[in-house]
Image 1: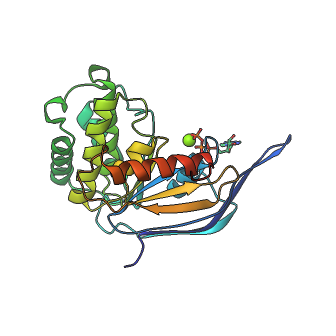
Image 2: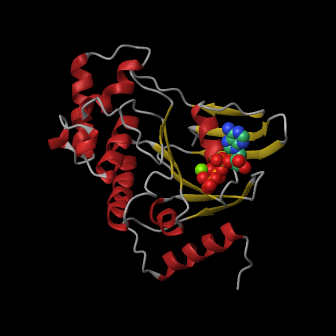
Image 3: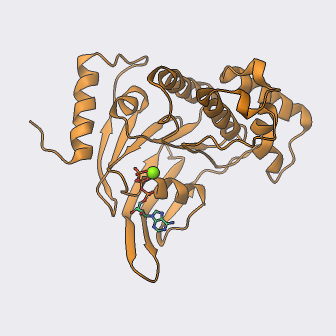
Length: 253
Ligand SMILES: Nc1ncnc2c1ncn2[C@@H]1O[C@H](COP(=O)(O)OP(=O)(O)OP(=O)(O)O)[C@@H](O)[C@H]1O
Ligand SMILES: [Mg+2]
């Protein structure tokens, strides 16, 4: 199978007049269709920088990124969900969700805009809040809107940077289940940065572990457990503890 996204030895050093800060030292990752990849690594190792480079918000110094192009009108290669949902407070939930879709180069007919918004409102359980405003929603609901807004442009790859870390455990688990449903339903490849080993083992097909800064891929751990996964199962716990040790750089017992 052809990868949807190929990162080939991406390097990045932040430079200012005082000092150089090497962040990425040659990161190579392939992501396949409908795959959920979790990216983990020590704080400050370059995870957000990597996602920002894939999203085009930051430029790499060297290395190449190949990504499958969206083919439909109103379709983009990548879309990003940040830790802070950052919705537009003056727009309704509906208008927030379709915002990016209205900006895409090829104009999407209004019927289809409506159709996509309705499907996403249903997928994220927000049907009855289409005409509400962000301040009327809880944190978890706002993050759902951010996910729906990113999916509105039918991205080949959905990037998520610690999207659920500000949420309570229960809301978080619901949204993790939603991520799996999105992958199954929309055939989207998902790359998610998380600091939570349980979250990674709960949703990921593969967990990519980055080294201390400047980051390289130090390990790729496949998670071959069927969904829905049981966080209390022995294999789940084994992988979760392995991931924790690898991120911390601790030896196996
Ligand atoms: N715009 C910038 N200018 C200068 N240095 C930066 C910039 N953005 C990030 N850095 C530096 O690059 C390194 C990696 O930052 P990054 O935000 O990618 O880490 P991270 O892995 O996402 O960390 P965390 O887990 O804490 O979110 C850090 O040392 C940071 O100080
Ligand atoms: Mg970060």
